[in-house]
Length: 390
Image 1 (cartoon, rainbow, N blue to C red):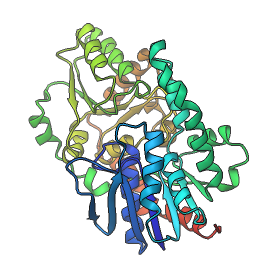
Image 2 (tube, rainbow, N blue to C red; image 1 turned 180 degrees about the horizontal axis):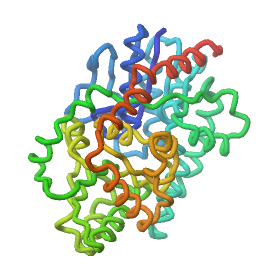
Image 3 (cartoon, helix red, strand yellow; image 1 turned 120 degrees about the vertical axis):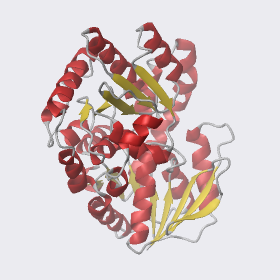
Image 4 (cartoon, helix red, strand yellow; image 1 turned 90 degrees about the vertical axis):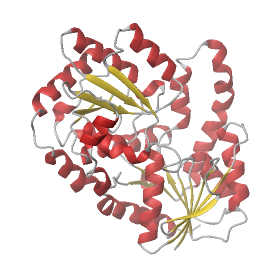
């Protein structure tokens, strides 16, 4: 089939779960014999058109300072309307979905529901000053409309977890017969081969204390503040550890200031954006990975990447995290998002997994989340959308 994919994130241009999913599934579709063309955001310094394995990649979505909810719809439509009519459309964001549908209204759409943009933006707004909320309030009706159009016009809506399925149904009742639960995946061979020893030395991570890592966009719902407060509680009890925070985002200055206020300068390292090539080794270097999300975790790509590296993972009982970690060990899921509960779960995990064979975690990731296995559910969802009729 001729598959036309639009995404608001592409890896490694952006480090993030949906970016990795967009690229990995496009490559897997191409390996299965589909003719795959992708349109993604323009990135300064990156080629506008290139061949990414067997995928024809166009970085042609330009925003020019406009809100993504406006720019991505128009730019996706402008690019896609000039393309040969494909057999099926795939969109990884509601904005891209609406742009594709405007360009090819008679072509069936597979819409990948990674998250609800209106809900996530409302969560962020609650943490802003009143004066800063105005723009978000103005955009809220547009975000709601875009999500509604994408969901209603899609022949199949793919979700990466039962949590996302339930969230989608709570917002769009009556959609059950068009939802396909697909598997999140990981490039197992890549993340299982990270050199943790070299990375630990290169990043100056002390060898005489446990190294606790998180890899996140630094935004309010990601829970990094709660992780820092949990670390403060553990260090206050006399536990020596190093916390590494990899990622960038709007809350970076606030988090760095909090670390100073808590007196954690000798215990917390902010790595900023870590080169993609270093991530497997950074996961492997950690004694424990923590996913401290406080709201809306649709899957948790970094969770399965850390597991593939053989690293134990602790997470909060938010979103899809219990679905991933529960079958492995329910004790790896914190009772709540509160720093005290997170600290207790981290302390227990470090004590109980010290010296444990890391192959247990790596094998779990391979057996449940390797793309070679996960892509079967995506292929089924793609075929279901394509053959449902325009």
